[in-house]
Length: 436
Ligand SMILES: *Cc1c(COP(=O)(O)O)cnc(C)c1O
Image (cartoon, rainbow, N blue to C red; front, top):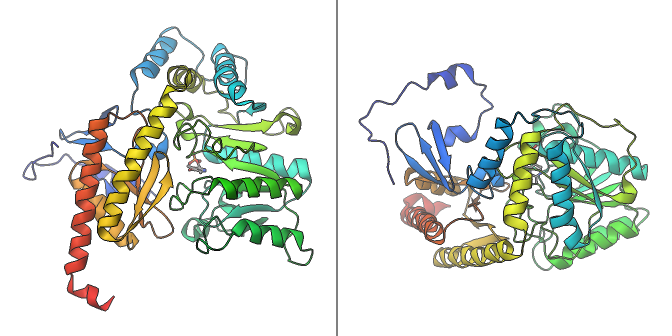
């Protein structure tokens, strides 16, 4: 891949050091200035080209600047279409609702109403939590170990990661974290443990308003719940009068192979949250899907200034029409997901490692976060953008575009294979390892 020559003087980037908050994160591991992106590629201002296996944390499932989506938006802007519309009726909103109904909900026999809660994922989660508490009159929410649901207080309370939780500065309460599928190893059924606690009037666990779950834990290390476990959780939510909320913000929009990540398990959540790849082009757009009977909101009881991102409505509609009109895209994702699984398993086997995930949301578990970081920085040096996930950031996570060309995909996986090999080799020959 084209890389800037080390001798060339780099342009002055001190503005970021001087003026941007220390809270910045991804840019620290990838200290370049990006100027252009198309499909799976990103380009920096030094002529460097990078293959993007981060895809905006699964916000760019269809790659960067997909021509069909981009064209739809350009035409809309050219025609002076509404940009900001609060929650006013606009043609793009009607078209999105109609398309979503026709291509997504009706073929799957789902009868959700669509709430536009504000543009980000955490907005969708906050709305879901608020609604579940309002519907049930209960305050406790059950979420799971290693779950990630966003950074505002309600969502953060449901998030497991202690470093993120510490940022809150106030107690994060009204949430219990129960063990996710596989948390205590393969022999312990954590759905049964939860059932036991919920059925025991003396367990100390109050009756919950909701059970909030990711089918594959995007930030929490790509743990994939089994279909059986998900069905048990859905069933026990129902029996205990709690709403089942599936957070499909990262695992949805085809990432695991089907439009919704829970389709394979055959469950019907009461509430579903979506964001990230929903607009398709990377524009902010989130929805909270609500089973019709549970839509007990009073008008305006929950709102937000940016609920009517019409540009995102336009691109979301174009994405649904382009990719989800028939079953072909899903079968393409399944095929690529299988290939990804094979490639990662081969790497894992070669070095005594493990793989995790489902569909096009998979990764390889390195011995520690330190080794995973070595892999991702070695990848970056070879022109591949890739990030980590997990409690210790120990999982190298592949989030390639779902529509990536087979050869380019193979090329990116070759880079990962090489870098994992190199890092594991160094580890094996490092004298310090003897003492670890
Ligand atoms: C990214 C993410 C969120 C939060 O979305 P934001 O747009 O960052 O607020 C919530 N849940 C899951 C599963 C996510 O991956």
